[in-house]
Length: 291
Ligand SMILES: Cc1cc2nc3c(=O)[nH]c(=O)nc-3n(C[C@H](O)[C@H](O)[C@H](O)COP(=O)(O)OP(=O)(O)OC[C@H]3O[C@@H](n4cnc5c(N)ncnc54)[C@H](O)[C@@H]3O)c2cc1C
Ligand code: FES
Image (cartoon, rainbow, N blue to C red; front, side, top):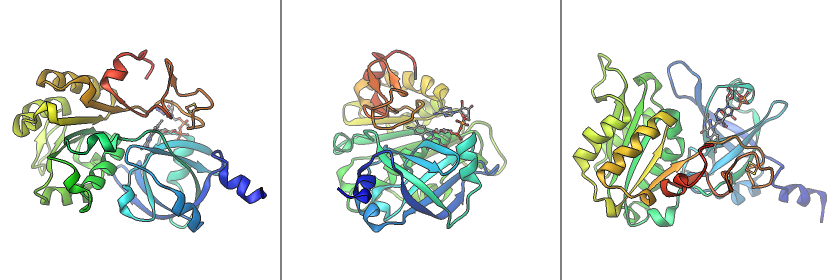
């Protein structure tokens, strides 16, 4: 085996990518979407992900961090990540420019269970910037070749204020379509805001569920957001009649290797990086509350 092929097969070695596009997502500019293109065409061909998986982004000289993949595999020969500036690695990433090189490992994790979702109505509930992998899923489902595989699609997305709402360009597209129902909400009203005002769990109950009235046996709910949003949204879904098996959540535990070797992400007997990050509410109920 040559040295090159050894390196290529090593899951700890990041592939080199170039930042081809950076989008500022929020008004205060601590959330940016980075589009990455592989420098080696063989790496691009080999990188196959499903919505809900994550990648390890390496900023050389600073470190690596796990980030959910925000683009759909149907989007093209690139991968997108939406990153909040919180610490060492993410700040270094935010200082980078289009044309700069960063490393990428993965894709990691189980992702959203695409085969299980097919043939069902889909209810998506997202809050804040945790909407990233749900955005990837919506883009995947709306792709013309895939749309017929799914029933009704309803999306509820909430942010603290309109300036914090990410992917405005996608939301504008989805508003115009008649094959997806979109409810937007912000915590406190603003003069120019024309949509819902209130917290996600309340709007879920009084607007989204009341309006779409999904049949729980045929609908799968996917929830991503801050822990407090999740805590209050689950009972709303349960009261409406959703079964724990039909409520899916994605966890963001601390991680290192991403491939089930180091144990950093363990919750009980589960490796969040390989058994998850997507779990059903039934699975989470049986796990220690370390997530
Ligand atoms: C599966 C998965 C998917 C993720 N997807 C995204 C995403 O799409 N976009 C995004 O912006 N972030 C995402 N994260 C969180 C991201 O990995 C952390 O914000 C990042 O590692 C911080 O690195 P840093 O070096 O900048 O921060 P550090 O310097 O390490 O820490 C800065 C601050 O962030 C806190 N922090 C660090 N890591 C985490 C974490 N995993 N959870 C909560 N707090 C943390 C630290 O306690 C500290 O307060 C995801 C994490 C996981 C595990
Ligand atoms: S991050 Fe290493 S085992 Fe999960």
